[in-house]
Length: 205
Image (cartoon, rainbow, N blue to C red):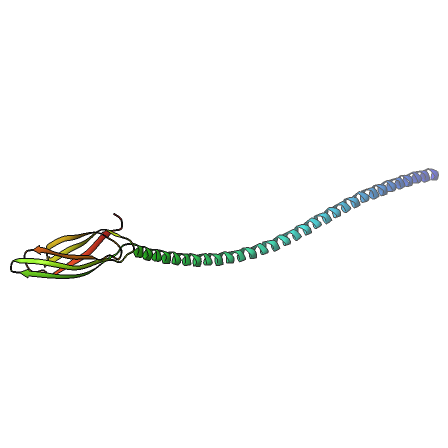
């Protein structure tokens, strides 16, 4: 009886030892796998951290470049403003020079063009029933080119009435050549109150 109990106890002990050994093996195997997984996760975490650090460095670099570009844009904006001011100033100078050039050209044209001036004596002569506006004197061309189709336009007034509206034909007058005039215009009515004698000409025939 005692021998049977001992055998049973021995068998149970062996089974327990086998179970403990199996459990220990399984534990060590599972623990080894978990350790490998932990190591792999740690490696992945390290890689991700390196990527994060790299992205942070790139972000910092891009922010620095962006700041530099902002400064360059501000400088270029200032330079553009200065250049625009210089252009405006230059345009103003150009406009002034063009105006001066136009004025000089006009003066030159006036100097080259014909120009008639008069030195005339004019009188209202009334003898009995004969009334005349008498014009006598000289017409000069002070320009550098001939004056064509020259004439003196004569307009005389008696109040609001115009008894004389005529002209004296002179033809072509060369530069520096005087043309003598002696003409009388008959009229009727009241005495003349005033008159005008205006030279006219063309620059070409």
